[in-house]
Figure 1 (tube, protein in one colour):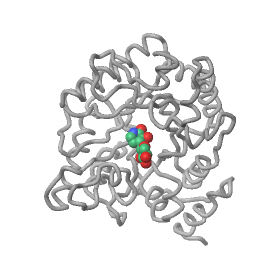
Figure 2: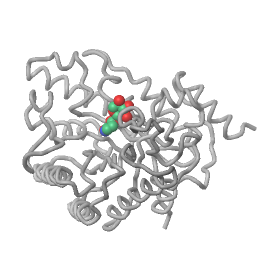
Figure 3: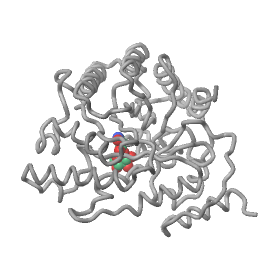
Length: 352
Ligand code: XIL
């Protein structure tokens, strides 16, 4: 009999080899319903503790990099699905569902794509990409982040939209076209729109939230197949959550028939002072306030953190602390031990 660790290690070893072995894994009681984490294949293959932790606590995963345009589409005529497929194999072997991230984003557009100068050719590449990728993963994913981060950081008005390669080439149609193309390729997968920096009461956050709300309403008015709204929730530890404003926003989205989920939760703690326990308590408080706002009008059926252990987080590289101490943005510490953040997840993901 293989024990659980051996099964996981076996699964990791199979990752590059294609089709998954059908390992029967027991569902540990520490698994939180609806809780998931983002991961990269590099980290999964390098450190068996990562797969063990995700399998222990999570019911879903999302790839950090492997389904973004540059990884799936290194050239105009070349799609490479192997790395995303390896993560899907890991998910299946460990009884986890998978989300797709992301089809249309202002960021991470390869140079070969940006070199396309002609509008018609750009639209063809865009539609071909979304259609091919969504068709390939038909019936394999629960949902897609179709459009990622469509609102600028400091919107000038509630109609302001992100100025990017796609908007320059396709106009405002880049957003509805992505949804319509995805829905045509897979009519059953849930299609979402994802945004960050809308959770606090800071002016720019409130403006961004209003612009996001307005865009969503426009899309629904146009009959665009949009099913879910992702609050990325890359929180800033020094900023309080705007509990009332966020709760009202989420309640309104739900009143329009949309599902609201948390897609990329972590807490940037670069500006926090104090000892580790004090810092962890503030991080957990922000998460608690976020969940309180989101659950005021309905259940939190899906919450994903952007990584699971502080050891593997983009925050360390992108938002490093001035005192050079390691950041502590995620539910497990660098040694994969749970922190107060994980207690908050447990509290809000209890089965009824
Ligand atoms: C980030 C990854 O975590 C980094 O490793 C990468 O260098 C850049 O992208 N919002 C998103 C994610 O939607 O795709 C981003 O992921 C983090 C912010």
